[in-house]
Image (tube, rainbow, N blue to C red):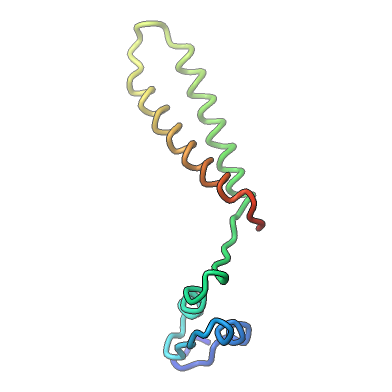
Length: 110
């Protein structure tokens, strides 16, 4: 692969044939070739979830939010905390979106 006009990778040719896709041998990028095949049939749209990394990130955000929560609670009444509150709101929104995306794919395996 890597040269113009090279044949498709052996593992891609049978899949392309079943999907009725033509492999463009002028495209040397295997990702472009695979994208062409995958776009022909939704059943070929298989993506890895990177579960461990996603769980690690959600735990990191939870830890950050817990720390921010304690900082907010420790502030005395009347202390200006609008900037801190803005940070908390943004992180909570990001956390909620991230968590929702992870939960939507919970039935999908790595």
